[in-house]
Amino acid sequence: MANNTKKYHWFVLGDLNGFFGLMFDNLTVLSFLAGILIFVFKFPADIIYTRMFPGTAFGVLFGDLVYTWMAFRLARKTGKNVTAMPLGLDTPSTIGIALVVLGPAFLSMKASGMGEREAAMMTWYVGMATMVIMGVIKVFFSFFGRWVQKIVPQAGLLGSLAGIGLALIGLVPLVDIFGMPLVGLIALGLIFYSLVAGIRLPWNIPGVFASVLLGTVLYYLLAPLGLVGGTYVGPPAMEFHFGLPIPTLAFLQGIEPALRYLPIAIPFGILTVVGGINVTESARVAGDDYSTRDILLTEAVATLVAGICGGVAQSTPYIGQPAYKRMGSRAGYTLLTGIFIGLGGIFGYVSFIVELIPRAVLAPILIFVALDIIAQSFQACPPRHAWAVGFAFFPTVARLLAIKLSNPELVPLMNFQTMLAAPGKALPELLVTVALGNGFIITAMLWGGFVAELIDRRLKASATYLFILAGLTLFGIIHSASPDGVMYFPWTLSGIAQQIPYQFALAYAVLGGLFLLLSTTAGSKEPATEAGGHG
Image (cartoon, rainbow, N blue to C red; front, side, top):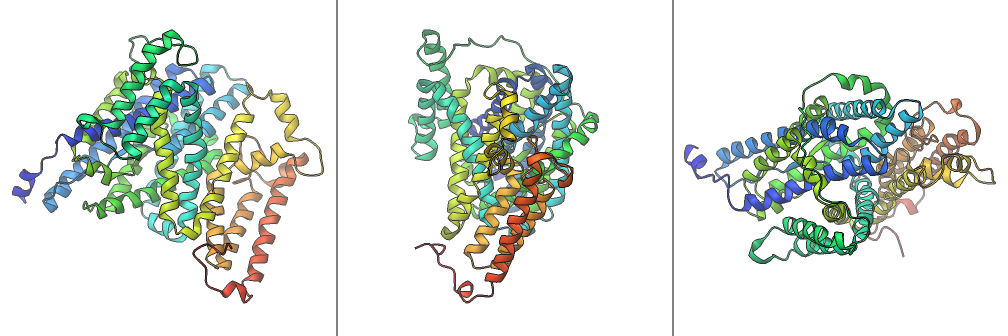
């Protein structure tokens, strides 16, 4: 064993490639977290940089240090050149929580009469509380992750994630790219060249590093000449926003308002657990047999630690450990990433870099992540379940539309309220859109599940999903008729909004009953086709 330990070269040239890839992934997520809150919701930047970033980055430091140690332990046990499991900020949930938890909570608190800074601090407490809740959920489900993975079809699990990739991770950054096309599209092209097509750049320059460097240089050369579109914003002031990730019980102040966002928090937590199982399996196939339980518990505790220390974004083991292995990375890249991101959150240079690099340059990395998630959702599921995967996209698209339409800068608040209650022969279109988007992750998982089971001729299982959808709808856990997505007892609603829980729930229940009846017919006993019965 001692000889094996000596042979483990834990830091090699490939770790530099891995470091740039993993580090820029984390910077990109932090950039969009800050950008969404600052530019979309007008959130005070200093609270993000000095309160939210330090704890969020500390969670990455904690998780990557543990994963680095786990690589050493596995190398000592096996005598192999082990590649550490990559850990970083979870892209779908970070963007999702910024858009549907933190931002709306901030606007709601300001609307209730709070001052801007008081509302921002309270939003921070809500974000912390959400992370603590998610951390506890993830610790619990780390023991039952395989059970969740076993009972919910992959089309539901991966389809819900792919919908987030399409609407929240992909479309939002795409607007940034084409807002500065000469900079953004060139950076995107380099990402596609190196990561999608897999073509090596000259001198083995890391593709992510080349994309960010060239895009940033082009911006600062061409933007002052008015050649990139938009208004030129010069380099940020050389000031670092110092903040310590000190453990605090301040999150307790945000527990009560955070509970209304449980329909969002729980699925995001479960998805990282299931994702952790998948990436651990992919690492095992690539030759590094990590303990699934250790991988899951580490990222769960990292999320919990981040929340207690002020963080507002959960960590997760990243998809692509075999890709880092192919780069030649060992354990050095996770150690470097953890230290760089963790200390950067404390000493403030991460916030400086986030302000220095244009979002149009970082956005292509998220486009790659979005496309990777979407492609994986179709590739990993049986081809016949592609219909279920695609159907699971729609709730997230509805949620994105609701977010855009509820922005007072796009639609005046009075107009939005009027359209919600617009009289007519059918339910108001805006009210239906809002309801479809509320609880979108759970909805997408269950929609994908019921369609996949239907395709497989498991009509009783499909009906069970529909009955669950009916029950959750009745109390606003999904399809909440309230614009802010809160749960309720349906009889407490008034006006046309009261029709949403009753009509939606009744429709799901009746369809479930119909499937139960049809499960007794001869046609339902015929074997499923790979095409899902089409044609």
